[in-house]
Image (cartoon, rainbow, N blue to C red):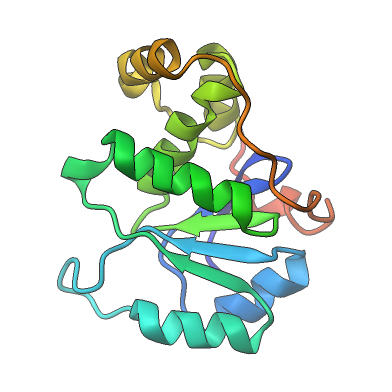
Length: 170
């Protein structure tokens, strides 16, 4: 099973998923998966989005493919597309990419409507991700979008058991 980093009660990120990971995600209580990795990225073999969508459906998980390369990561349209997915997919949601960082950055940028920047950075730091380098982007987005909360996802949090042992110490 891939390492899962919990960012909030309804959101987690992970590195690249394999076909066997979808059954484990379902067992942990996840209801949706967002894939932020473009097909064909890098040299290593991994599950293409079309196959991942079939595996997710087989396990009763909603699936969305929002491929994002590094240059588009802070693009307003990309962040807003991620926000829309979070608002419409049943939660809890797991987003993944090659390492999980790209998905965590998207989540952080999407949260600027609902959370103060320092809380966003604390949440990611508690998950073991230092995103302080994007603090200026978070502050700029927070100033631009205001503090109108997005529509909440139509579901609750996942069960707590089974996740604590997958979070990094510190």
